Length: 171
Length: 272
Image (cartoon, rainbow over all chains, first blue to last red; front, side, top):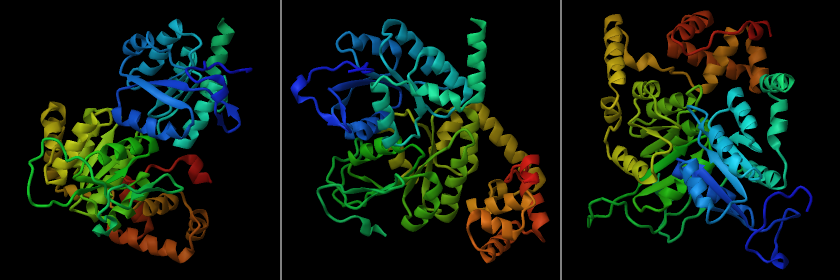
């Protein structure tokens, strides 16, 4: 399946379900967040996605990596943000060990610095924690198909685009 | 008012197109931990959740569903919460502070002004002295970070719903906030300012109208922009002047600007 970077697990191929015309296996997501209520809400909100499961959560990147020894997720949702761009640093740290693991960063409020940091760290997407359940579901689907919605996000953020252009020019 | 709840063994939660939801039946659930068991039936505390994050609201609603003596009666965007709170008169309102502009503080203040019996808890992604200080100023009963464990937040809801003021604990834990409070009240006292006037008494719509007037728009333009009729704008303006004790529109604008209830109109906005 072209562009399908999420690994399929556990479910036999003949029982792979359909989700809006897209073949999906059991997708396992892991959440890094300190906010238990948000994790619970994520689980409830994304439960509408067939064959998608938030199977684990942790508070720090270290905890997450330790849990990946048993089961490597197909998708990582990161919500460790202000005040020191911790989410982006977490993504960067995890990307070193798991370069193909798609990451969606969830932030409390948008800033050029945060989006740039996520871009630099290798996040596939970043979105506000205030995004609706439906929009987040769409984003998860896009990322699991191999898309990197963060690129299109940058095009509507001139300061981030300019900084990126400057960085590319210097290299 | 409590006719939202009938005896039932299941929760029926209806999700609206705008992402808000309301509970129509009460569930049979475990009691709150650490609470005294009483033989007298107690009415459950009713809670309104005003948060921009639908995902957080769902998490909070789930947590509340797991306890017996607290009921979530509405959740939705903070912008709608003032009207809803007035209609439902919840015991407790959870209000997202709304970073970065802290718009939730105004919502919480308006809920309190219209429903003095409703205790408010300000929720924020993170705690800092400024936010705690602002929450104290609008009369919140508690300030809580959103990553507070669900059990703790449920305890706080229970406490403030039964009359406790937990924000005093936040002040005690933050010497800078305590110091700010003392300085602030000293300065108000010296200036003869009533603390009730510190937060804008204007509704969101009144602030919108006054903001457009500050940018040089006439009633007709304002009516067209807001999709209301001209007479409504005039009525709004009369209400604004009465609230601000202003003699005319200019006086109202200047008063609101000086009080920090209106942002200074930008050159672009004025030109437009």
